[in-house]
Image (cartoon, rainbow, N blue to C red; front, top):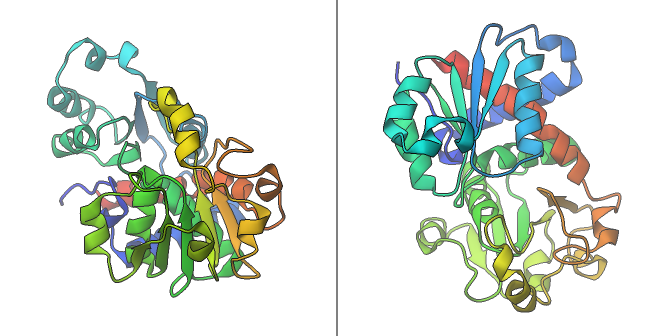
Length: 300
């Protein structure tokens, strides 16, 4: 059987993604369903970027499912001393059952997956963050039901989170409006391939109008700290405020993958508002990843 990987949302079918969401909800509601489904399984976690939610959620997920995890930074492994990605993938995949990687270049993740005999999960690259979208979709399903046919507004940088929302629009069948300053658009090929459901709207209020979900992220991601001052100027007017949320549907939810910079991309009032589900969203990283780990390990 071909090894299944999860590098983007497009690696699974819409039905498989829905099944994972529903399994995640079930696991969250009934802890006894864990039943050590990953007993004696080991997850290797290779992180070249810092992390709170991703690392903790994966480690706890493996523990709750009866498995174990190994955290590996470049300084801990031969990857940091020049061993090729291909060789590392071949060696590690003979010793562990599943691997998750948090790195910069998406191409590096793809090279690793091509040489791994066990499932590889994208914990975040510069291009995509699919695990976060599993949690986001689970959160929406829990609060409002199926997101199909709804309108989602993304306000901010067209980076990895935005690009994962583009894939989510395709896989979960919703309309996505992206409000971003000129020069901060997502990949043009992705926009062209999804032009039937994804659009760029320069005015945030127009993007948010009638939306059932409004999402954002920091304006300066990891590795862009030196650009922060310049980005603050260019993103002026793109903060998600109560005034902006007033243009959305009356039952609209607000999401942010965290960590948030209060007073920059989102006001403190919106982040702490009852319609903000960011804390459920963060917790659901744990449950969605448990369901994903089960799926990938069973697919082998």
